[in-house]
Image 1 (cartoon, one colour):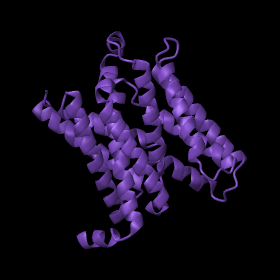
Image 2: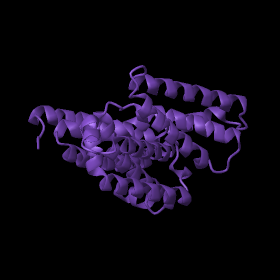
Image 3: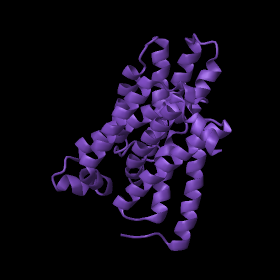
Length: 281
């Protein structure tokens, strides 16, 4: 098996998949803790459907660079979701459901009406569940993912204290002089970037798993924000790396395999947490 893996690693597309998978998993886990604590766990699912709809529009318009349309629309939707979720008339979960279902329905409708692809069902399946082949990642996509991922990590580290304050008590953060709305906007933009990056790897229907499972797994073991964040990042990277390796060796879809490993890791952490009671501090 090791020899077989060594042979696969000689191919650039395998290394590309590992680099992109690890970077996306790291970024997703950092914001995942914040989203879970703010009870916005499903915002990743909602935004991924928005990105799917945006990709359908870009396809209809025959845009050569879909990112020019997908990223701005996803960022705008993230801002609307976080803003609307604070509205007493439309709660966060209802806002996510509205935007998510609407974008998914309109996206699929447009793809059917204006489709120029001979394999529409295959294209939709690939977009929803991730690419069935790791051959789809190009050097340009890897470079773009690297730049954006490093930017996300740097932003999170630089504004860690402010994100921590807004996550736990937004009203107190505002009272203490923190520009909570500005940091909510920052969180929304970062989330949107992560969602768009992750679509090529795991697909729009599986993105929430990258955001939620590592955070929930870390919360079974630790109770402080810093330790949970660090543990979540480590678990997410390990699961993504392991999932990609397993998918290469067994020939299974990359996205589904990564999510399966995340679910298994959560089960292990849940069991360990029940035995030890978690570690506080």
